Image (cartoon, rainbow over all chains, first blue to last red; front, side, top):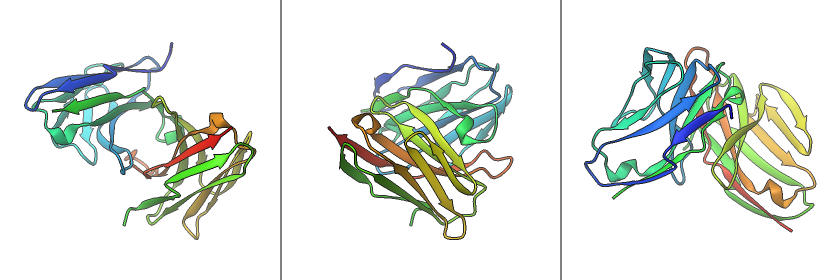
Length: 113
Length: 110
């Protein structure tokens, strides 16, 4: 099925451990982004990429790294997880700048203990 | 104060009722979007507005640029409309930056 695939769906991580959240899209979209969703707050952008080889910081990038080696994949890495990174993470892709062109992944619920 | 405010935060309605969800914003925008987040977590786009009104099935979205306010209406509500509805503003060219509201959680009872 065409779309954005996120893995894993759920994960529990210990403080200080590292982890990579995977995002893959098969729609040949250029723009990919990572958001986090926390209770009482709107979605906030962590990092984004407009094309392979190009990444940039979003509004809440601290503690996260990304890479974009090809069009399809956009992994999000937590090098040393902290409890403040407990959240639901969404990957979104679009071929245009308009949000209604976005396709969201189903989300990854991450708990850092 | 958040740049995007939604009201109400929670809403419970009986099946068949007319529902209104509001979004007010304090920043200049090029577009406003309404999104729906299903109980399973998936997010889909409902509307993109830059002026006036749009209708899709039982959903109607309006925007007043001067008053910096948008409303999402659901006519003849149904339990399958139960979801979180999110307002997002932005679209400044070149940045892909959007500011998301915190969402309105709607529950429609049969």
